[in-house]
Length: 118
Image (tube, rainbow, N blue to C red; front, side, top):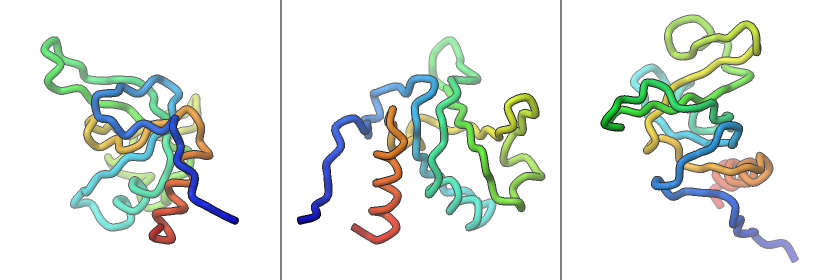
């Protein structure tokens, strides 16, 4: 009999900080088009570290790496391209990082469940 497994290593708590190398799923509603929103909300990225940290920790942005982004998003200011690593990054607020896990397969299960409305 098949069942939906509850994964214990996925973190949804906003108080938990991601570690460099963790897999993440972000949710962002931009006014830059449906294609960009769908890509961000349905793609697993890799947490790359904190950027733009102030001394009061008021504005902390989290950098997330993506390998394959939609062709229409490659030009413009939506992502930053790094030639040396051949990847793109985008910055998010902590509240926009919805799921964190060390195991990519667990996040793939979340995306599959979301795709089929489970």
